[in-house]
Image (cartoon, rainbow, N blue to C red; front, side, top):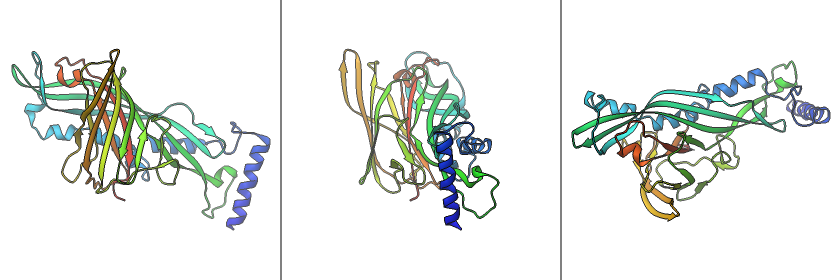
Length: 326
């Protein structure tokens, strides 16, 4: 029976390529409205199979729960005067919206690229020491992140009777690109993010084209980070003479950490354009009860953290998905 279905599938594909080269709106293999609903369900984080992949990035960035533990004094907004020395800072995210940008980009009849956008809004909260005492600042922010999804059409051989050729196939998420974005304008420009383990090195220079496999092998398999030494290296370019505050965000680790600050290891200046390299090395004990996780790198402008002006906030974000429990 499987061979008969397979032959039927091949014949169907031949008919499509003969009478309609590439994809058209009349092709039985073009995504249907039901397919597009599946794409949106995945992007929204409402698909059980892939939910963790599309929610763990924002979970890693959101530090609202950490702020709540500090009590009402930390949540109280006070006007600051003069320079500030930050004690603790992070995002308190209020709203997240995920959407698909435009129609899927087809590659032949079996691959669909779906372009997505995530908009997060909230307050960047800074607890700091000032000449007037300890204060808390809130800086409203909007960050926009992007990611491309690669869906592949697979044979759906479940033995049920089919009404047409379209029902012989279904779409499955195969790979995702590295999430990237930040504020407009950004705080700086990332040149690369390197994730280095004992066995592998993942070097991202173009996040929109750096696809990582979610299930089936593609270009790059997601790293497995359970109980392994890890180094993350970030290279960025900025026109500001002040170093950025660069942090690594991830799901809560065994030690309770969810954010780790990078160290500036090198800096060069060419005509007022600064190239800086930041690093963080640690031994991962990320044992989240999730199928997927995210290492999110966030670079903030110096003024975001060290200036009391609540309008000064700028960020750049890239994130690499990983498998926490394999």
